Length: 273
Image 1 (cartoon, one colour):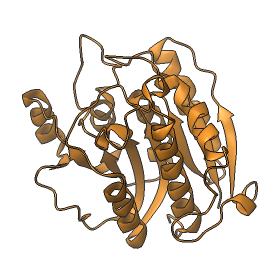
Image 2 (tube, one colour; image 1 turned 120 degrees about the horizontal axis):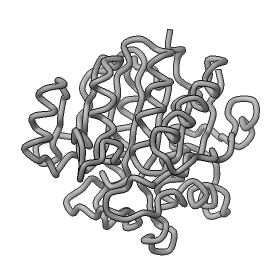
Image 3 (tube, one colour; image 1 turned 90 degrees about the vertical axis):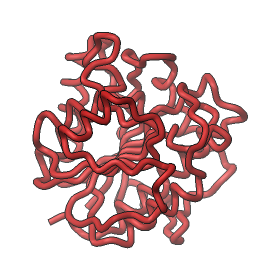
């Protein structure tokens, strides 16, 4: 069982600022800059496992046109996991999660999504755009292939998105009320991390700075709780890093840390079936 790392440099439908298309390379640069090693917090050294247990497929070449972009991302993700591999992508904005989840949910029944974000991204449309990065979880849930969507770190719920959460049965854990304990998880799980779930103090290189977020430690501890559950993480993404707004590569290094921890989880966990 291997993990495929995939760069998805697409940000055409970002609603405020573009720039996250540059994140895959920025995170790779942080991974290999020599500032940190390849060991996860559990002690797993990823470097000697490269090629046998995980590999980097590089970046996709994606057209600007949104329907075509979604098709390309979905088809490439489907091809990446056709040999029962797991997929870890670096975006790009949050739109990219939708086609990747299409591919993963076609391969795994009863998929649970664990979504970390400041925003629920449940708009039916934003500014007339159904492909906006504020809409991917509405698109995912209306397709009916995901069994469960849990959201953590949310601190920007609008009335429309509350209605959408009720409509789709989303389990929303707003940050002001959440005790940082993960609920019970089992079966195949997909983890989606919008880095703006973190307080801007920990990740300034994002397009939507929303104060009052999680610490990096709290996010890592949440991932470790998932790792300790009976769930099998079959796919994941790290999205919405905007290198043009970063300070001393701080956010890119956070992204690299998350990628290492997710790789370690996906390599060492039990089979999904």
